[in-house]
Image 1 (cartoon, rainbow, N blue to C red):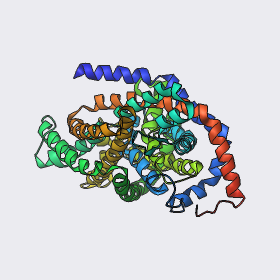
Image 2 (cartoon, rainbow, N blue to C red; image 1 turned 180 degrees about the vertical axis):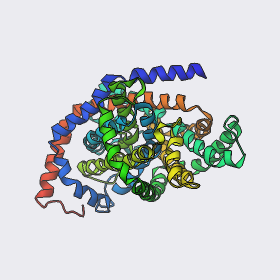
Image 3 (tube, one colour; image 1 turned 135 degrees about the vertical axis):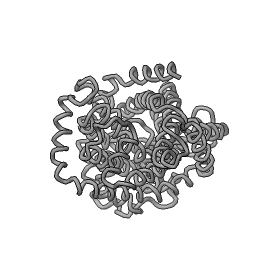
Image 4 (cartoon, rainbow, N blue to C red; image 1 turned 30 degrees about the vertical axis):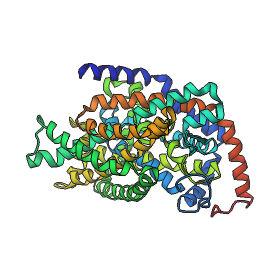
Length: 461
């Protein structure tokens, strides 16, 4: 096991070099400059689309704008907003939060481009069904000579969307909050409990996963908005009780972002790298996974889906992640010897003694499972692209089995696996989007001109 952890750690470190930070953040800055920030003038229109003013029912696609965003957010507003923030702070110090914000800000433009392309260049799978995602964008827009790049994304997507991290952290908080206090497990002996939880979660989630995107979207569109509101309310109450510490906390974030004093090794480079890593894990901008969901939206206007996708980083990183980060920092628990979801749980338990950890438990279990549902769809599409739709069922069965594996795996190995796979996914996604950026700009100019001229009704009909 130690050899596996070392190998996965070395792979993640190699992939997450400075060159990838430049590709993600620099690429996002390029998209902001290339678009001249014009899409930001239409945020209200994006919200209108999200609230039901979408395309007619005969448009291509499987789900509405709202369900597409809810499905994409289920993959981002999950443990990435609870665990990743805690990991960023414990490894990179408070300054890492600033670089998570930077990743989110530039990520809005990245998502505008990637989601627009996902609809613009949808392709047919071997069953004749219309699909979206970076691998189809590469195949349809760049041609067969670029297929190795499409294949690279699909392979990395199959691994990067495995359920092990979400299940690992879900079972960890169930163990900390429920099993250990009840005497069902101990800090040193918890394999039996973890295995049982893994089997139960595997069986329950499998029943939803086999329902495909329509059933997954139906679940996520109900649960995600409720849980975001729930998290915002309990965090607002926590911050209200620590209102006096908030200005100093923001000052600490900005100061440490450029000093690296609280980071491991005290290096500013470490702060930036950790912040970008965790920021990408939180909002997935530049990875291409969100394009798999947005590519399924019912729309005949690619730019509309790009506008809706822009809202993702704003909601999940700039709002939800910031709430979690402030909760950890104002309570002072970030100095405790704890990692991952346990650190977040300590913050809420301090303010809501006796039931704070139960509030986090509710959030983790709900969002952890919705993320797993969304990831099963992502991975299945990657499997179908590589091996055909008839073999996709094998991925679903293997995915359900790996839910159990995730329950008993070590956090270190799991994080390294995700970091390495995520970095690999970003390479084909960002390269193809940079090449095709002029196509998005042309489509956006045309769409915004028609919208401003009254040719396109706000209802989207």
